[in-house]
Length: 172
Length: 106
Image (cartoon, rainbow over all chains, first blue to last red; front, side):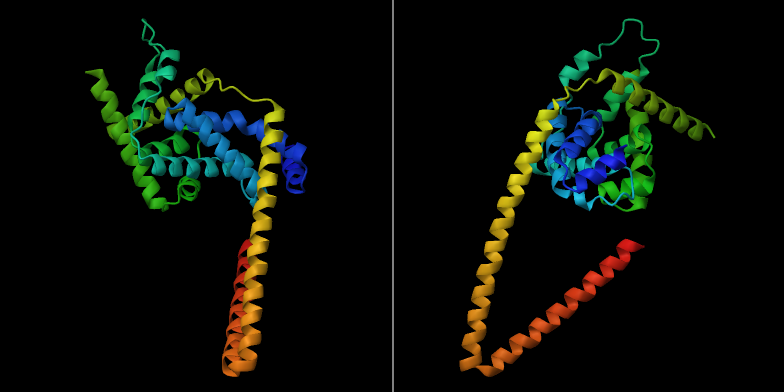
């Protein structure tokens, strides 16, 4: 279904391209949101990602999934944004309010993990999200983030270490 | 052993966090018209850029051809040199394109 839409979009069918982008819109917003913890930034990066996808649709060679290709563009766009802004990451208060801590905290671990993840630096957080949230292998992550496979492995390792430390600190 | 166990449970926690976060996030998805407008805008932008690039190309071609005519009559050696450089650049371009095509097929 997707590949038919992609082929039609590559042949110049604008309706097919619009449907394809609509189909993947939420996926990209959620990815950037999870990666950055900033809802507004997620929408901005997604819009830029879609614009780049429209311009480069003919450069998609069907070697990977279309969603993987979009994630690659979104990751690079997000990194460009961060480079331009050079701002410190801010936790999204709105999102925090949407995920209130339950008075009975028996299964609220995931909330703490998510918050701890957002406290990490980009270089550790992005590979961790791609590896453990989306299940990409190291080679794909290296391609998406334009770093060597060994660097990705060590960043995932140190990211997990930092996350562990962060969660232990929260426990105190 | 313990470290491996901790690491594994951390990975599980991450996957659980991903699942929960995913269900809690509800992005506002725009209507199909938004995507159609975006595509129209980008297509118009692409055509504008294409026209600009073509104008630049024709402009530089005009300047280069004028320079060649001038050199042919007044400095023939410069004319020959320009031809040789052009041929080298063209050969390099074709080799590079051929190499990239082979790489893409692999």
